[in-house]
Image 1 (cartoon, rainbow, N blue to C red):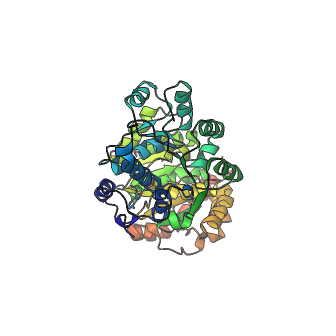
Image 2: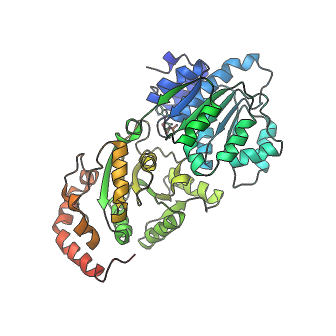
Image 3: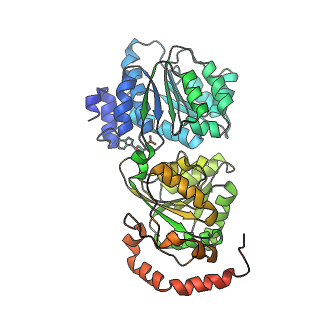
Length: 430
Ligand code: AMP
C-alpha cells in the first residue's frame, strides 16, 4: 500500500515524499480510508505508531479539497486537543510539514506561558487549532475562539488527559462544539471512563486498534537489570559511560527523582537536563532543543513531560524506575524505535518493582530479556534474584558493543559482589 493509492491530494503526497514517508504505517493504512469517507473514528493506539499523520493527513486533505468552495478561510475548522505542550508543539510541527503545500495554517496554544502571542495568532486567523485543554478552555471563555466553522475535532491521548485531571475541561469543551462534525478519539488504553467519553463524543464510528506489541515492543530490543535502589545511579553512570555517543532518554517516575538523577550524573561529569512539569516552559524547550540538536546527550524526563518527545536519533531509553502502569512502559520504550527505526530500551528493576515487571510482561506478552550481571548487584538483589541467570531470549544489546567488557565484568563479578555485600552490611539503606 502506498500513500498515492489512498487517493490523497497531490500537495500532501509531495510533502510526505519530502518527509521520506514511503508507506503508510498500520494505523495510517486503516484509519485514513475511514476518515476520508467522513466517518467518526475510535483509535486505540499510542504515540510512536504514526498516529499524528493518521488523523492529520485526512483532515488536511478534506480542508484542502474544500478550499475553493469555502468562504471561511482562516477560521478554525479543525481542533486537536492533546494533553501536553510538548505533544501539542509536535503535532503542530507535523501538520506544518504535511500541509506545507496546501496553504492551510495551524497554530498551537498551551498553558504555562503568557497568552498574548497565542491570542494574536488566533486573531490573525487559523484553519487548524492544536491545544492543551486548560488554555483552550481559558481562551474560549475569554471569547477568543469561535467554533462556528468547526468541522473536525480530534481528542488525542484521551487516557492521559484523564490521568492529568482534564476530564471536566474536556466535557466543557465538547459541549461547546457544533454537533455536526467529524470526531476522532484516540487513546492508548480503554478504561470505562474513556469508553463512556468516546460514546458521548462519537457518532456512528469505526474502530481501529493497533496493539502495543505490534506498534513498538517488538521492534525495540529490551533488557532488564536487577539492581538495588541505591545502586541505580552507579549502574546508570556505568551504562552511559559505555555509550558516550548515544542519545539517551532516562525515565524517572517523579519530578524530584528526575532532578536527583541529573545531579548524580553531574557528579560523574555527565551533562544531563531534566524536563518535567515543575520546569518552566522555556527551560523545557531549551533542554529538548539541545537534546534534539545533539548538544545534550542525556535527557531525564517524567512520563508526562516525555509524551511529546520525538527525537529521530534516540538510540537508548533507560527506565530508571519501572512504571506501575504497564501501558506506560510501552509508551516509554516507544520513544526509541520510532516508526521505522529500531532501538534499545533498558530497565532497572529493584526488588519492590518486581510485580510491575510481571504486569508489563503480561501486557506485552513477552519476557523482557534479563541482562547479565553487572558490577553493582546489591546484597538484597543477589540473594533474591534466581532468575538473574536465565539467558536472554533476544540478543543482548549490551553484548553487541561490549562483549569484552562483559567478560571482564563477569570475571570481577564475585569480587564486586563481595565488596557490595560489605558496603551494604548493616541493613538495606533506603
Ligand atoms: P507519531 O505516532 O505520530 O508520534 O509518529 C511517530 C514517528 O513516526 C514520527 O517521527 C513520524 O515522523 C514518523 N512517521 C509517521 N508516519 C510515518 C510513515 N508513514 N513513514 C515513516 N515515518 C513515519
